Image (cartoon, rainbow, N blue to C red; front, side, top):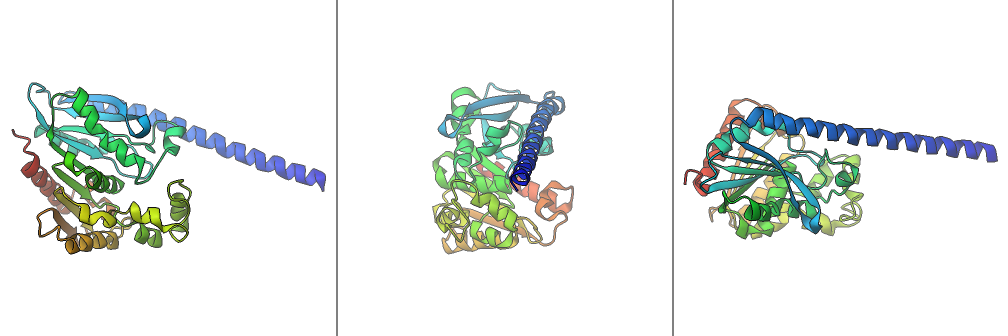
Length: 316
């Protein structure tokens, strides 16, 4: 019996070591892919605009990498946008190149923070994820970096935009620091965590429960889920906000954005001219509808540009 237990323990230890080695290989691969992404941005965009990889201090002085894209005319001030990437453990990819070209060509400075939890920067950075917490502060701190080191960024005309999880961070940013922003756009944003927990898999729910800030499942500890849900803060909206959603979204189910919409309406934010909402019926791509070249995606982007231009005036 003693030998059998020893053998079982050795097998378990070996399996654990194997999984750990696999994880390290994954993080090494992510770092390599991030280096390719850095080069790819230069290859695709450096002939049209200034492209830089920068760093600044985020929440708790954690060093936050970010991409900076600027018009070559640095002699004058430019309206500025913080662009927030999607996915729980994602990163800023070259899939944003079309949007970057459109924005910078219109005269915008764009900064894209790789907030904590983003991939491409190793295990410690990946594991530092703080959903709806410090990651939001990491994004907001881009303002101070621009203020100190990018004189051509006109922070009196600062907007913020994001997709999915980036939309979730966008919403929290304008609720927490409304005085910093003149406009915000959230496309298919995560909006209601309690509803989201009910509609997603046990594995997904466990991802949240395992984070220190949540301290368990929604049923075990509902307070942080409510505090970190954008719908909870609808009454705090002071920044003009545009939200786009798709009713066939299979990730951010439409009920989340219906709940956000209803909260905004009850708070009177639509009639106050602060909240604008548009929903597409069964657009190709569902959750990714704005990422494919379709009539609906072009409508979404055209409305997004018009919304930002009207409030940030990049032509000044």
